[in-house]
Length: 323
Image 1 (tube, helix red, strand yellow):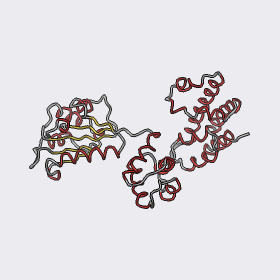
Image 2 (cartoon, rainbow, N blue to C red):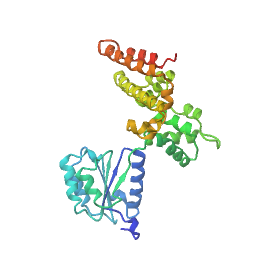
Image 3 (spheres, rainbow, N blue to C red):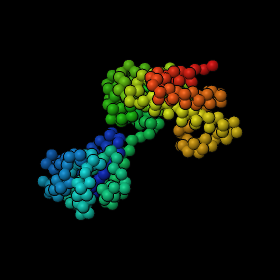
Image 4 (cartoon, one colour):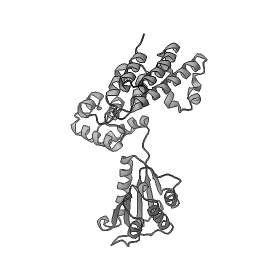
């Protein structure tokens, strides 16, 4: 299908991962490559994995292209295919049509499934990883995306954008487009501009609240609680208790001069505990132990008929209050 060996299209690809922006970019490139071989409007079929029958997908794959060297069969939500329909594709991939490119798009198709293995067997580039970025990786990506829209953005502004919009890269890119249209001058977009132009659409993540709690930042705790509709006070209490135990461990290791072993002791990556020592120093040992005892009492009250939200808020106020 192509003169360059590295440009040869495989008979099937699995575009696997929850990063929509990555998936869209991969599909765009794939469609562009196939479109060079013929008119895609006559040579493409699209299926929804939740409703499609495997036999219909296979039939489309075995259809000869019209006035083209190749045709595209796209299956969205391939991880939602019923077992029998996925098996039909596994059988097809044992001897796929050389004139069809089957593109399977999935949020999370497990590596141990037969369908994943069947695609992976076609070549090293058959499975394209579109896993979402880690939260700490997003600011750098946002700054890179901003350049593509003709603007630059500060790291603080990138973090503020994530706070307001969430971690969905498609939504973040969409907001960057809007910001680029409104931005004037050559200065980098700053936090104030982001706040002025972007509406909050993302719910605050529980870990943001727990971080604010650990740092005894009552104002941010209250801010987060107002924007957390789907996380129960019971779950938040449990997460805060876990963090308190981590801080007790951090204080104990620091007292012995073994703070460098904190990540290994807690069995966490280094980046997850980078602030723990600073947070631990914000409490006395007695305050941390007292917070655990009062957490127990708060949980009892919550399970005994007290208003869970009020009981949890009272506990947070008591723990974060500085003496």
